[in-house]
Structures are given as C-alpha cells and as structure tokens.
Length: 75
Image (cartoon, rainbow, N blue to C red; front, side, top):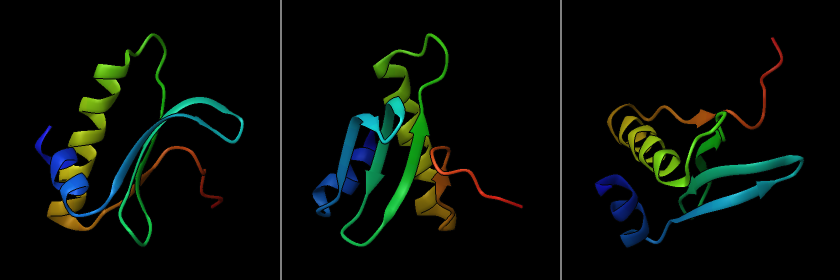
C-alpha cells in the first residue's frame, strides 16, 4: 500500500469509519482537501477497502483526479 504510506509520510491521513449517514467508509486527505472518499461495498472487508483506497490514491498521484463516492454530484 505504497500510496497510503506516501500520503501519511507527507502529513496526510487515512480514516476508516462512519462519515455522516454512511456507516463505513474509507477516506484519504492531505493537509488541504479530501483526495479519496470510498463507500463500503457489500461484504467488502477493511483490507479490501484499504487496497481500493490505495489504488484510488495512485490514480490521484498520476492524474490529479479525486474519487468521491460519499458526496454524490448533482447533474
């Protein structure tokens, strides 16, 4: 989980737990903003969610694209 390690080494944080009305999520943020916010998928384990978080952080580091499954965007 090298991307999570990089984030934490750079002063960021990872949180696993409830977010507002969502029972369980995984989030990653740097000192300025949320980079990744993932909702728990059905029967998804915490290790699986952390791996998915790491992959999404890798996408952020490569492209600058954030992932937010928690706050739906109204079109």
